Length: 234
Image 1 (cartoon, rainbow, N blue to C red):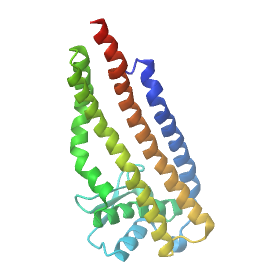
Image 2: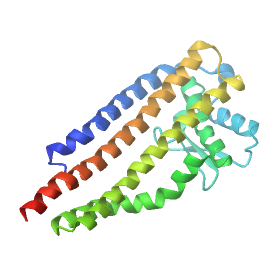
Image 3: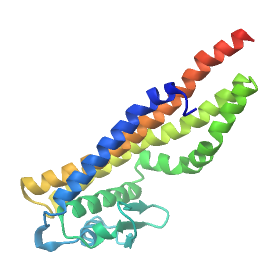
Image 4: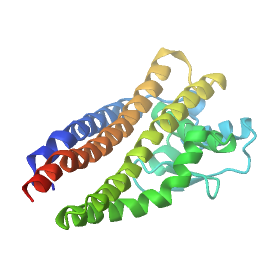
């Protein structure tokens, strides 16, 4: 499928957005890792302070290897921060730590988009592996129903990417509110830094959603137009 020029027509917008997002992340991280937090508070300390203030003392904060590997695990109630965030006393680290804290708050409040995304993860993982094969088998065997099953399986990945958007945007909004509320960031430069770092990261999720939607639309297009052409020739 990747050899088909039409595939890139549908997928290229998401790829370009992804390149743009990565460039913005690098630029903003390089800039705002140089802006210190008040009193030298590190990312780990930011997360612990915000979690405790919200009554989430049962959520642990750990250091994890890797770059931009920060995440919250709802299964173990663990907030994991990359070493560049965990130990760093700068505005970029504070923003990222607060964002992950936002996910912990979503989990505690049973925030619906996050709950829905968590429940469909096993389905999405299985569907992502099976979808191409099911679709190709349906096309080769000229069984439209089987091909449509493949398209429906592809749609689960698109749904996951779309559900991710409100989850991430909401976590970033919570992060900025919490940082200001607890006086961890102050002044225009620090607020601007947090907004730019989190805003750049948000574009990666937008890019993923656009790419997933593009892939799904590509297969729908093939089914509607090329599938019909094959059927009419037969």
